[in-house]
Image 1 (cartoon, rainbow, N blue to C red):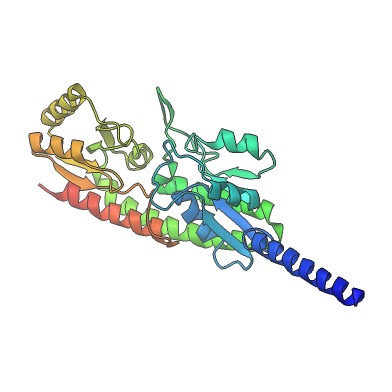
Image 2: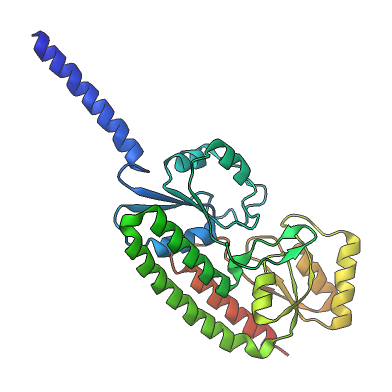
Length: 295
């Protein structure tokens, strides 16, 4: 009788223990968990890890967070990081919360995908929006492939194969965009947010002004008047706002000058689709060709 009770107790303990292990394994145990800091990094990781058995990719921040200005780490984020095989970040100052995470998890393997990309700097530091340039995104894919291959060696060849496939797609995209935008070199544009310097550099556009340097930071009346004056003097007819943020200031400038507002997407939000970045950039190409082609 005692033996039966003992066996019953052991079986219960086994079930409880197995259940706990299974719950943790859903994120880390039998899977290699890749945590991406935000949307552009997530899309890159989705492509490099695509179809690899036992590998899971999660976007740490909500799909409509946009850039990580003032983002606060949540308890769900902490759980993901505790189970992460690697944490992929953009770098270049984008993840302002990273110091707290590094202090809490000194053993967390982190890979900076912007490594090796020449950064555009201003008085406030480096501009982190490197992925808006297709050429830079190709470098980020290479960095992602290298980091994942080193962290999860058994799948190294699969990561490299996926990366090569995605890089080919990005090179095809770059060829298409180069052909479509080459004749517009030197065009002056005004943007709504400082997300496009790398894009402008790649296609040799001149960003004459930035209406709002940070989302939600409304320009002063003096700054707005200065932008209106600049548009009138230069006869710039194209203002570019972003789908993630209100375009009130851009609309105000447009009303005063007769310029037209177009929407350019910096690819910081979107669908959970591994082809999302390419689709967004192709749409941006169409918008730019339409904007510059109007009389």
